[in-house]
Amino acid sequence: MTKSIVLTINGQEYPVTVELDELLVDVLRDRLHLTGTKKGCGTGDCGACTVIMDGRPVTSCLVLAVAAEGKSIETVEGLAKGEQLHPLQQSFLDHGAVQCGYCTPGFLMMAKHLLDTNPHPTEAEVRAGIAGNLCRCTGYNKIVEAILDAARRMEGVAERRGDAHVAEDDHE
Image (cartoon, rainbow, N blue to C red):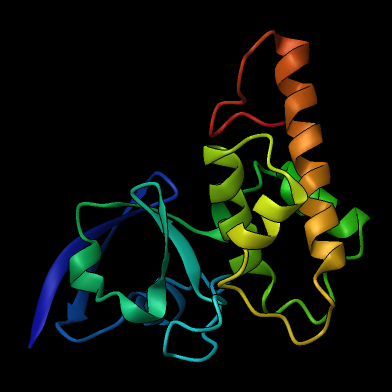
């Protein structure tokens, strides 16, 4: 059985007809061709499919697409603004926190949520914040360093503008 729904992803509405048991990760990748979100374990354990839904990180392999209707969904495709990378993306590149890259979108989205809710995390808070994401290539140190560096970069942008916190869609 199918249902026509409208998904709001990165601020854009996508009308799509889905099976009632179709997972959000599959709709993102296979129907909407937003392939940044990766399908890893399929059980919510690896974090590769992490997206932000209504301000909270979720593993999209455990969310039915019909349950995502009416919610605001952020994917890794929404981080960069044109050619300008988000500070997290730039920090991941600068710190070599990207190995094979498969887990990177999930880490980026989890890190974005962490910095949105805690713009000045400690190393321990970063490690706790990304604990649900798995990487088989790195020892996590470069990922943690990249997130801490991105927090400093984002703080610098806010200070230059006189803001207390960088707005969610405002990064340079």
